[in-house]
Image (cartoon, rainbow, N blue to C red; front, top):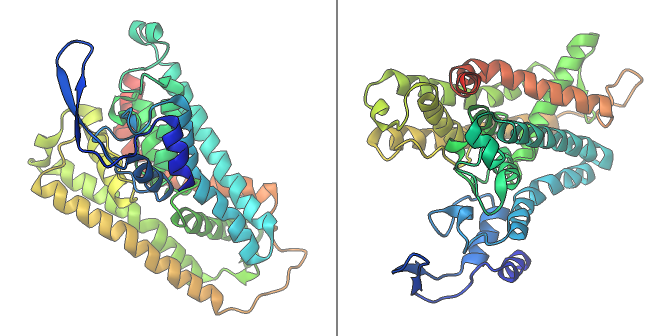
Length: 373
């Protein structure tokens, strides 16, 4: 309710009226629909839904009229999943544990924003130089910077709301939006799902540290054994398997290729993005792909179903396995998981594991396109 009031103050419409006849600068008129847009927008951003009231989503001036409303909607995307790290710290009895997870999320988010800014502002060519960056497909009212921040935030969470056209980003910029989802949407991720995804990665990072020092790994006073690692590994493998297998099958069959607006690396990126978005419960799209076919409707639906619910099964199984254990006391050899060293280890583990999983596919699509341009 508070967010809806702020959006109304920014100029987002909120009414129960019908169709309005609106005059155009070039002459003639156009019909615009009214509606309870501000309240729907608040639900969309806070609840990581992604579907806009109008077809243009958050690029529509009735949904997102000013630069301040754009920044406020980005804030709504991020506020709940970032805040849940403090909730986690209170639940485990150590706020510093929550702050370590928060620092990991913030580091990845800031890194992705910096990379996106670099790729979109520094792209070469006369048209890009005159426009001050790769402006095609961006929200021209807000510019390259604000559009880039929104794109990173919506793909690092599970929202899927957009204020620009991701397919028109540079090759490397489109790859950054894909990689944000492929991380598992954990920086900060969806409302709740981002936190448990990050905790799975924390378990993996603790296990890697244990292998390096030859000690049984522990996290929050619970030992990480073979059973726990199997659950964590199953969680990590489900979504990449869905994305990569379905993308490979789609590229091998002749019919899905008819849905591709573009050929070559960008066409491959369209399909890879579609399955990445569906399996990771994001909802955004490259929009150059005609997914309204029997093949894509069926396989994207399967990716949505399995990509969301199967990981939950292994998260709950891991939680149950840890709950059965009695806490072990902290000793001099225990890895301190609230320290900056662990934050660095966790960031490295996330990027390396994801990079090893998705790098070949990214190399065929966005990386090939970016290096060729």
